[in-house]
Length: 161
Figure (cartoon, rainbow, N blue to C red):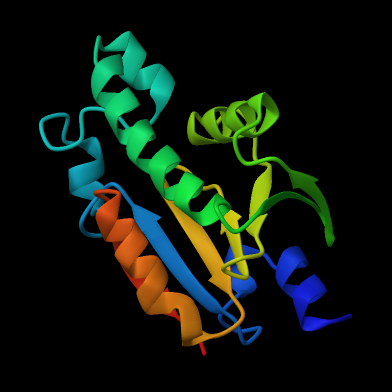
């Protein structure tokens, strides 16, 4: 299997060991401790339904807009839906289908991942407002870190190659 196909099929916990670069991208500026996760003052919600139930949907939507802005910047060089284990289906970056897939994934309603050929990046939707990027090597790390910062988000860690 080619490196490209191996990267598409790669799971987050295998990426660095498989020779790829793994970046975690989050709304949080550090990895949360267990105490922070349960502290309603520090972290009032971790996902859309919880924010809506607490009357904080506007705050969640602000965070969602930041992720959408980042994903749109990545999609400027093309975007495709990843079908596991190693197939892709091209999408139009501003299409209704793309928008729906992104919003549903950010709201943790499905787990379709995306491939951005212009950055050679696989975007793996995660949980609790933290997601992952798998890259073939470190050549695009600084560029993607800049896009993450521009979107008002944070890179929590970079592992591998």
